[in-house]
Image (cartoon, rainbow, N blue to C red; front, side, top):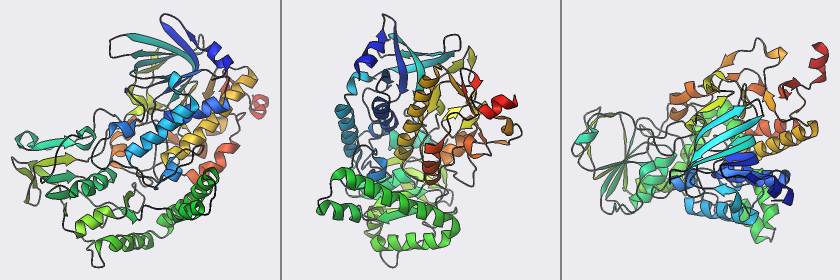
Length: 511
C-alpha cells in the first residue's frame, strides 16, 4: 500500500475509516483487493472476513476429496499463473490464494473474525457505516466511501436440507456434506450420498476407495463431463520452455474459446453434445455402460451446472462395483437407512446429504439507506453487480457456466475504472438509475428459469434483485459477451448518477 493510502486509513478508538471496504476474504475478495491495490494504489482499503482464515468456500468445505469444479487455468486469477493439474484440491487452491495474499502484502489489510451485523448508508456525508462483531463480544465500526461485497451467494453455516420424514429414527450418522468432520472414519462402512451434483460427484469416488459400498441416491440425473485431469496444451508449452505468464494467458484463452463453443452447441445441438458426453463416460465406465435410467437428465445440457469428473473417477468406481446408483425419491428415513418411494430400503452406516445450499443475498446482512431498510427484491440490477437505490456499492456475482473468477477479474476492472471516474469528477457518490428510455421496461426475476435453473437459485429467486429486459439491467451469465461489453462501458452514460446528477450530455440537453 502506498504512503498516501497508509495516511488515509484512519483508526480511532471506535471507528476505522477506509476508502474502500471489501467484504469477504474468499476467492472474490482476495482477487478484488489485489486489483484495487494495483489499479488504485492511492486508495486505502480493508477486508472484513467473518471466518478466522481466508478461503471462503475452500475453507468451509472439508468433505472427502473436495476439489474445484472449474479448471484452475480460468478459475485462477489472470494475474497469477496456475501451475498444476486443471482440477485442483481445496488444499492446492488455498495454497494458491495464500501465495497471492503474501505476494501482495495483503495480510495487513484483512480483519479476520469480523462478522458484519449492519451496513448503513448516509446521504448526509456519502459514507457507509459498517458494524461488525468479534468473538470476544467487542463491537467494531468501519466507515467507507465505497462498499465492495465479495462474500459470495450462499450461507456457509446453514446448508439446505429438505424436510424428510423420520430423520430422528435413523440410528446411523447423518450429516450434510458442508458439515462433514474430516476426522470421521468411514473405512468399511456402508454410505449413502443423497444428491448427484458436483459435491456428490466429488464425495462418492473419494469415499469409494475405503468404504464397503457407496450408494448415490438421486432424485434426478445430472450431466457429467468426464475427462483426463490434464491440459495437453499447457503440458506442451511447458515442455517447450514457454514462461508461465505467457502459458497461463494462452491456455486461458484456448479454454475460454472451447467453453464458448461448447455453450453455443448446448443451445444449437444439445442432443449431439449429450451423445458426446456419453462417449466420454464410456471411456471410464466401459463400452456397455448403461445410461438408463440413472444418467439421462430431464433438462437441456447446461441448463444446470455440469459436474466435472476428472479422470472419470466416479464412473470408474461404478464400473468397479464400488458404487451403486438409485434414482428415486425419499419416502422416509428408517432406523437402518432410507425407504424410497418405490419401496426399496437402503441400509447405511453413514448418510451424507449433498443437497446443496441456502441462497444468501448480501450475506443476509441488514442494509439500510438513509434509515430505510433495503429490500433487494425491489431493486433492479445493473449488469448483476450494482443496484438501483443503493449508492457506492458493488456485489461480485460470478458465472455458473464459466469460472467464477473470470468475472471477479472483470468486475474489478470496472470498479477501479468507476472509482477513477469519480475522482476525476470530484464526486463522492455514484448511483445507477433507470434511464428515460427504460420507463416502460419489463421488470423480471433475476434470471429466466429456462436459462439457468439450479435448485438453490429457484428456491431463493424471490429474494434476489430484479432484472430488466435490456442488456444493461441483467446478469446474463455470458462471459463471452461480457468480456467484449465491459471494457466499453460508458461511465458517462445516463444510467450513472454522480452526486445525484446525470452526466450524459444528451440527457442534460433533453431535460
